[in-house]
Length: 215
Image (tube, rainbow, N blue to C red; front, side):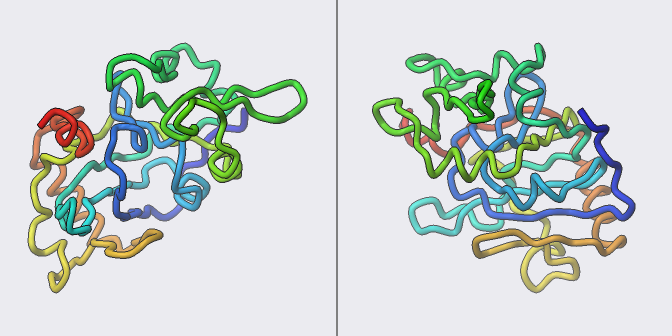
């Protein structure tokens, strides 16, 4: 496996987490991982870069501007290595099972012919069979982003401070599909200062889907 490259110029990637289920990102097992979805970010983000996911402004969710998670990329591995890595065996989904085990993101088993077997997961069909569009999209970039320097709030996160929201001095919010890549050193420094001031790491809130299910 090629060594993960450290960023020559630090970036912060900001995007809206449209489906906050604990699957992408997956904040369990002591690691926050982005193993599916967002192929552009998974392809481009380097060691030391930041990922910032904020809530959806959809009327049903109404979490726009609230932080879902933030992580500093510490490691990047290929999909086949993620599948085999002992640290991430607990991220292989178990369905039926608890919500935490069901939303495992280690779902792609490499096959000898170069194709992929998709485990029954959040990216499968309702009957558990493979969903080819998701397989194609997820494996188009065979790169998993990993961090232990993260905070995950799910649907219980605070609003980003006003300077980081629309109209503020350092607007970080992404309101549409896709993502924003920010490389302004001052903005990233201010974000890091705010993140460290939280004095929090790890899992600190339930995913939006969980809260709806257990109402």
